[in-house]
Length: 266
Figure 1: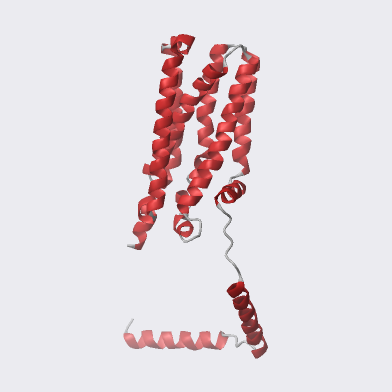
Figure 2: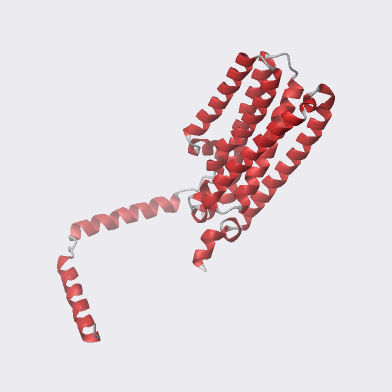
């Protein structure tokens, strides 16, 4: 297509669009200007209201999908059924460990939502940016997961002749390890594969727990509680490190937290 033909076609298109353009009435324009003036006056006197950190965390609860709470409740119910039906300390200690690890998977989609849906850039432009949203989500989901694990421990203790401390250790170690490993994966892995990899690492934690139970069942004896306590403390320290690294990464900015999105602008 030569330049003359291209210019002729462009001119015809412009003329056609001009004929189809609707000319607004003066009354409509006056109404639009009046509405804009009213909104401008309102926004000029409006005060910015900061919720504060605690109300902001509470407000995040309504953005967590309802199935999250339903899944956590279902895990607690499973724990109750196993504890009452089996009447076995061996089955209970394994179940409380595996189900405690599985509570981590419930929160993975919500914690990972900013990167998975590519809205981190939008959150960084808000008063409460991505780092604040991430902290709020971790607190909300962490509290709910801890409550679910506590309910499992309570059901196991009340159903069988077991001590609260030892059952808490059986649940805490896999829970801390799963939380830490899932955060490490969500921090390092590509967004499209992070959720699947988080499932894989939690499944690995559950498998490792099962192997330990088969090969070293004596570790559940009262004399070995010191080993469980030491391991749980180390796992808690690992979890604290992963939380710190994740929040630092979010605080740096879009280039660090979501480089797959930031690189599209360079």
